[in-house]
Length: 429
Length: 132
Image 1 (cartoon, rainbow over the protein chains, first blue to last red):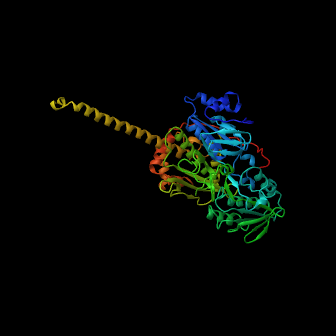
Image 2: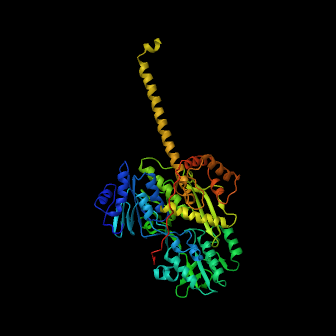
Image 3: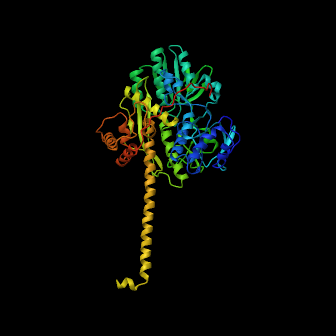
């Protein structure tokens, strides 16, 4: 909706509002008109990423369009983080990873509001945005991660991020980082910093190192990649990455663990850790992360931990009833990946549909996670696991039998590409 | 049956027995319906988790095998072979080993019942945002 007036969309007022001619509400209203029963309620989803869009689609599908769904998303387009490291390697462009939301909206009668959430009144079940407000019966908060600049306030501004991009949310910053690498002299040094776990996409930084080294190998063979990792070791696909760095990029990638960044000088692109000070030609600081801002303003995060505790049967917040949290903002020993976000979204969607029908949610959810990393333009490797609800521990536990590739391969490169096409189709159509 | 005929209590006793039996039957039916629904949503949600590679309801794009409408016996045989090592794979054994045999059987039925449909994948477009 381009210019929503101040509105409160409950199960009755939604129809009323649509009836007065707000164009973008008509699609959803027409779908309801075809449905035999009146809507069972209204679910508002904050965030149109992998988690939020999937939840919206599957609530509509599994409720046979009997639950009204509104998504609030700040951006006008969906830009995929998975595969965005390939933009740095040069084998993809950002335009290969950017999509419109119109098809999924139209196919499933999802009401869509492009706006930014400014307040959430969970006691009144109301979401306030810059240009309007919405009422909900249940709320899904799926904002992804927020970057925490408390320790590096000089990097908080957009101006600073033009010089030193994080490129950890795909989009303009990914393009910026690619342009900086393209403009760098041969023999230059690319320094990237990895925050302490948990952060979005555990293997992502190491894949990024491969992609930048792959670009250097072709175009700037005297250049180097230095990884300053705040963690004590490579946190995902360790053996595979270390072998790939040795086999494909010998002498190019310098991995330095236990190296927490404590200061940055933007003008000189100098980074200081507990151990050393380094000057970079291109500097990429991946900041520490926490649950997205809407989760923070709704008080869904823990007092001493910036993530959201949920029930893994429904993803309902442990702090606030009728509010669900899915995706990267969830506090869990689960990898913050796109597939994981969609798996959580479907369990949440299924639970909401059951609960709104007066039934009970699945008491033993099981789902999968597959995450591919490219080591060059064409070869990839995976980590794949099935997770099962443990009724005793009340968490999702990785089952036996999961694991990683024996080695990166061209075949898995094709699988990774097919994964992307399929997950995009599932989320966006 | 003089005993039956002689006792006025018996009809109400029989009635009560039928009542109890009827209640037991009904509660069993309700329980069975709840259990069926619970099982249905368990498998539906698990099956949906396959969509990242195999598409919505098993209608995949690109090179990933289509699961929608796949013969149930073929599906379960392949999955059990991935699980027990009878069929080599790069990825699928990591998924199959995490599922119970019963889940594999139920997934085979779920996917065999899905309609094969062909829908275009989303079309990429130019990024509009210049600063974020």
